[in-house]
Length: 175
Image (cartoon, rainbow, N blue to C red; front, side, top):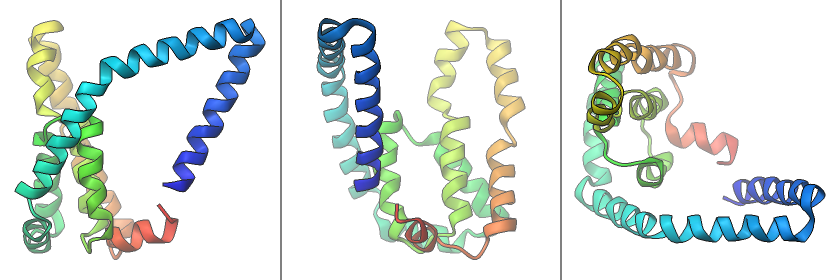
């Protein structure tokens, strides 16, 4: 958390310096005004997202996840993790806090990454929007083309980093 904050703070400071060099304090003030406007628009979504995250953590207990993910290892675990990621509801600020609870667990890291890849690639909740806004054929093609990506990612991760669990993997990097 401390490293993430410092990195984001440094990036923010550099962007403010760049904006200041282009237009002075007036432009910096406009940037803060736009940021506050975005904050007030997103704040209700964030509050609801964290409520959903808390409820999901209660509904899907870590003991249940432990039981399921310890039984489902290997290719079957990669497949189930990828599908579970695709079915998990919500945007990143809903599921990242939820999956952050996994980092101290003894879950195989390849299954964790299959879950995250499944969420990013499959995200079945956006399928109706893709069909209605773009084109059903294009949405179908995109999903068929990307279908093996989380599975391949999990298999590659299993092959090269198979002995690590999420607790060991994240612990070594201080995340």
